[in-house]
Image (cartoon, rainbow, N blue to C red):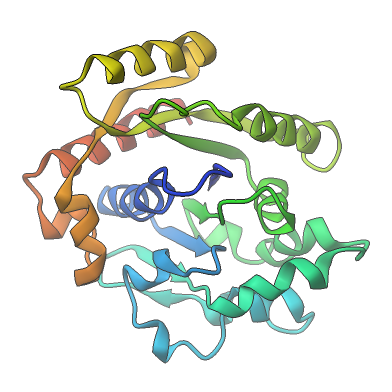
Length: 251
């Protein structure tokens, strides 16, 4: 299973979802790879010291010779590995535009590693550019985090349209795994209205698990830990564990 975590809006809890969901799956004994395709490298920073990274996903995707396997490094979480990003990845968009194999670079590189992992999760930048397209072309499923806010659904049509275009030609097997509401403040009436609104749009594709606002979730990456070791009894840990259960049940 290759799951891309995508939303072209920034600040929706995309990276938080990628790092904690991958840890949750790894904790269940599944060999898991987290591929960081966001030039900000926040997923990488959450588990490793990126200053020690000499080769990253940028090098993999611009080089014909460098296998993806050679940039993968273990994390402190058992069964969890990361293919790190660096800021250089921001230059990838311009390099791939106009290349015939531009949208397929990641898919081609993953052929040799996919069988080595039970689950692969891909964190993407907050855009619908060539990097995100590469992730969607290489994936079996896409998971969409949507922030519980007044403008929650703004831009969602563009993302769904992109997914449909990917399904139409380069990856007909791509499936919308589901939508998860993040940064939810259940104390407010507005939050309940937003939840109902998102539910009316996505129906049974909306996960029952809702990720509530949590200081612990924000703090854990700074200590290079997932929420499960940083604050194992927190609401964030319980919610991401619950989300992982739902996801594994669906796939």
